[in-house]
Length: 326
Length: 175
Image (tube, rainbow over all chains, first blue to last red; front, side, top):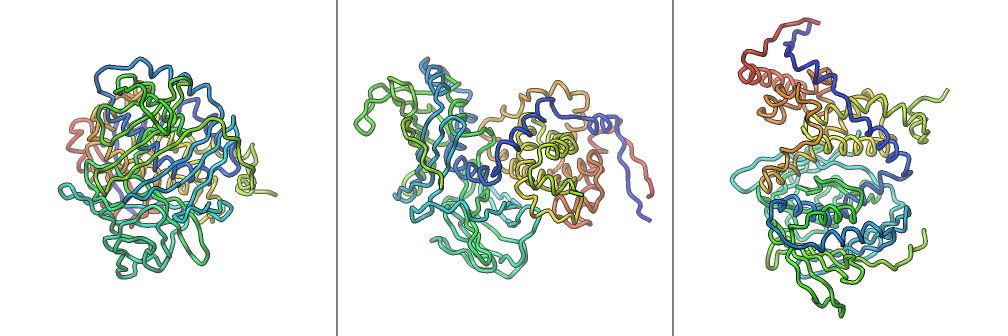
């Protein structure tokens, strides 16, 4: 016989009866039917936005209370909304090394996405991509955070995953199931084997986790018998605002006209641009805009300072044709 | 005869619609009450379906589809919570305005109290009392041992008893 307490409260029935908004069904179905390869795209997008515009979203959230300026921003927003064809190259700079991490081509409803590995070679997206969660328990002491993690394919726990101690997991890292994480200058040390557990990551990308710090996501390649590319969420990825693509994020950000300091006539690769800098924020964010088309040319997000700073740049152009599909 | 799962795996439109109809409210409710944010719950519900559809090949039927979807939803929520925790210090007002909260304020008293509990207690409570999953199913969803779930439920009730003094009572039932 199983005896259990039963909770009774007047609110409980109302909670059980709560239903979703009427528009959600159509939204979900559209999403499911639109993409045959939705999972792969989602993951790829996730990586990209984790690394770049997700940070932008955070800045937007974090600085909504700023004081006033800039009337030009809404016009940029309008220009962006008219664009259905664009190309974005995303670069990631750490330790002075700038690397192309992804490219996106959008032409109306068509979209193509390429991720580049640490050697600058396109990742073969036709490989099987598993859906991973990096589950982390957190123990906060002062400003340091200890992470313990479990890697799991959705619906299927991975077995024989080693325990790691003090590992710094970064973009392009390689995890070999059953072996220590390799391919990273960190100090991965295999601990005792404990299926399903990987712990702890006390820092990410060389930066200590803290209660005030935004950490970007990373791509980790999982190898289990054969290479599998996967994007996992790593640490605290600031994508809470949601959104379908980078331009939508930018639109949201640009909708707030009180965020920016503006400098006219700033040179960018030989072109005169308008430079928009966020007045304040957890990270440094700059947007270069073409004064004629009012379209963004470059976004630059910098996290941290000095040698440990990480810079994420998205270069926009509006003329590139879609590359041929493989 | 083709099963619903087989139809889903070949992305049959009718099967997808039926699948969403069957589980959408359930997942949304769970996520809305965990996050207390309508838009976030919508995003996470959508993301849950997207991830589930992409992972159907790994669904082996060892648990029910409902439990499996809760498991994915829970992972999505857990990831959101980690992000949200970091975001919170940036702008404490961010989570206050919840478009759509007016629709559900009648039942927010209990959620207010739940919000004061540790997340693990709150999660176990919602899964058991609102989603009406069994202890075993909750263990499947959260990946925690059954004993841990029972302990969390017990502590959740204890704390709620204090927080909701006057509006709470509990009974013992046998099954």
